[in-house]
Image (cartoon, rainbow, N blue to C red; front, side):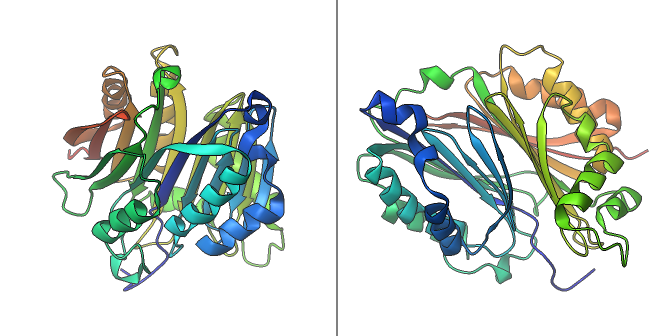
Length: 340
């Protein structure tokens, strides 16, 4: 195993805003010009490599993961040694200029493979929580930081939430977010995320080839996919399906192979919807170890996760549940390949 390599585990920041002007709210954060977004990403130390949008939101593939911009919500997910939390100050400033006010913040991540390589403020979860606290408005009073454990010491889930007193989440009660982290990918399948030596294809062309070759295009056939392949290896994609997004990121190198999948669903979806998606994801990567974090207000959603994964030869090793004030609950499950 390599002593050090690329950190696949992402840091994820989700910010929600509200405004008094309904005209502004209709476009909101989407009114940010590209130069402003570049300044935010410069603070994080990453850049845009590809983009797509529709009537609901804009999705950007980054040099390290993804950015999603809705009128009143922004999600930034970055890997490697990026300094994600340094995006908070400029984002709040730009949002204020648009007449928007922050009403909730959520930060999540798994356990880093190479924690000693992380720069400030990501040197520890304690430092991250302190940094977020210092950069949030004082009216976000419902605050909680939690490390959700598992039976595997190398896998835990870190969550920080903060919500203002007047924030109403009822409009999103039916929505849930699933974040999947997979390690020890099947080596044969992982090789599909390497570009052939001397191929000469650019990132967009090679990305489309990988999307088709690996079966990723079949995970949600109705989604518009924006993909990108890195040289010599690595892959990212964003999928947009009406007002919902999905995203995949792959670090395929032996010794520290990693892939992530994230999507948004509704409790009113067909019961088999998330099960079918997760089955397809697992079949693309065949990980030896996998963790799944489900953020929701409905207790039924996370039970569908185990029902989807276990028939594929994976066994649930641990399950942790935590409640976050005015932000719903988080269920963190870990799975490993079932021993024969």
